[in-house]
Image 1 (tube, each protein chain N blue to C red):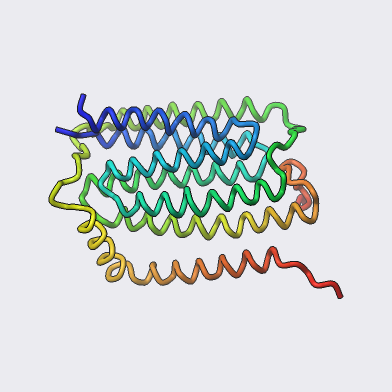
Image 2 (cartoon, chains in turn brown, cyan):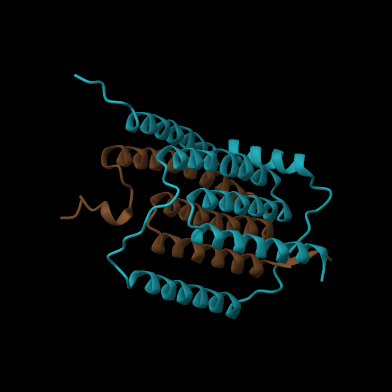
Length: 102
Length: 172
């Protein structure tokens, strides 16, 4: 029997999500923070597809499809914002982007 | 040890290693390339889980479109490496500790509630890739028609938004 327990997929997904969250916290480059967010989205997608496969249901796969579409939209707008910030300030270090501070 | 489990273990090592490489590379271009490799291994997981359509979407949309956009922006801005002059010296160790706590407690919770009887068997040979695609399409255009149409509006809004944000202001 070729089987993998679903818990292995959940564990892998938890580890990948944690690495992504750590990347958001420790890096100063907004592009790498964005990439870490994509990694976290991917970890969530993996759980969706794993449980879709366990329950033989297509809803999980369709949710992943929507998540991919939303991630594409998010990346397009986010990268446009980063380009615009870089154009106006010549610097995209997260620590120095504090002009919204009250 | 069965063959699916061996493939899973090898690929999970690759995906965790590439995720760590993504977070810890000094150069943002290397980070992006590590992330591409990570997305490809996740696509192979989707194939193992019997979701070929999602695997192909993953490769074309994530590894193809999104990461190429990232690489373009990194090279356009010259943001390969940003010299970090952090005012918060305690932030990095704290982030490491909190990430460690998060991963330990999530592993504990998953292991303590393990349902080892729920296994993912190899995709049934009678349900081939065409069948998967047909079922996906039927669900997408009947049960999930409204979210699907809203997704198209969302993509249109994102496209217009990206164009407006990066438009050059005309002088005068």
